[in-house]
Amino acid sequence: MKILLLYAYFRPEQISSSHLDHDFIEGLLAAGHTVEVVCPTPTRNVDPAVTWSLHETLEDGRLSITRFRAPKERRNPIFRAIRYFFCNLRTFAVAKKIPDLDAIYCSTTPPILGLVAAKLKKKRKIPFVYCVQDIFPDSLDSTGLSKKGSFLYRSGLKTANKIYSAADKIIVISEGFKKNLLAKGVEEKKLVVVPNWVNTDEVRKIDRADNILFDKYNLNRLLYYISYSGNLGHTQNLDMLLSIAKRMRSEMPDLRFVLLGDGAERERIAERVKNEAIENVILLPFQDYKDISHVFSLGDAGLIISKKGVSENSIPSKTFGYMAAERPILASFDLESPLSHLLSDVGCGVVADGDDEEGLVRAIYEIRKKPEIGACGREYLENNLRKEVCVGKYLDTLTDACNAEKE
Image (cartoon, rainbow, N blue to C red; front, side):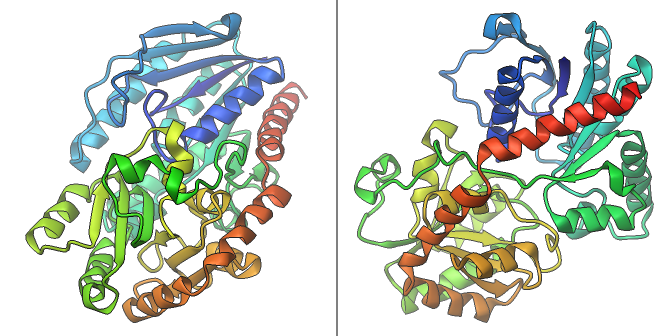
């Protein structure tokens, strides 16, 4: 089959889910399919040493990448929304000209990209598979950009429902996501639960003596580090984390918090760290995927933090990166979330309720006493969430969607 993949961010651009796209494409090619990728030109987290072009043909002609020129992404939400609409128009204009397609795939990054896939499905009369990595417009409410019942929220819900209705199959990353969409009226026969995975062959434990990030950023290997890798945005409770860091300077002087990544809040947080002289917080840039094992192995513990009520249905993908690197996980998250239950069941982390500052401080003291629990996480991944199994479910979902279309 010839599969069209629509992306808002694609290599050499890197985001937290880049490895999922890489593994999925690798699986499609290994299964004998041909892949067409349409995406904008990269604008963020790009290694200047990596070359790319507007048109690339790889894998003996079975992988084609078509990029269109797009304005650089900015942090302003209004400009970003305008850019998304522009990219949607260009994506449709490019994709509609690609001949002999058998199926379309895209994800919720950004949430309106599914509208392009829905329109292409109608025009080309081929199946469309939608991967829900974030539930829209719930995310508007959780980030404070809009409230439930507002015009923007209602418009977002109408948009999301239109995409759900058009999709032949919908991949969701957790049972919580599935329940959420069922409550929104999505047909159960469309929904397939496939957790995000990590490639345990690529992500592994790196001993501190061999971790290149310590030398690259002149970090003292004798200190205790809690590391966070990922988006530095509105949903992460970064102000609470800075408050904890300030009080921990005297309570635990050898503790350092390392934040690796980018996002809408990075500049503001950097200003707070500088202006308030929070010396035990270190901000580092997003790292290249080739160093992913070093990233997830950097901390003595890996941090997952979110405001209460924001992500109660999800398990952040960084969870599995920490687990693969055998790092104990420190979580500030909803106690009844799938993440909290996972860490409790596997025994590889300590959880404090979201927004509970005192609870998170206690969890920091507790996790320092349990360095050995990180090994349980990797064992769980190898037994339950191997890349090959999850990618296989993606491929089966595409096949089912195509077979249903023919019936």
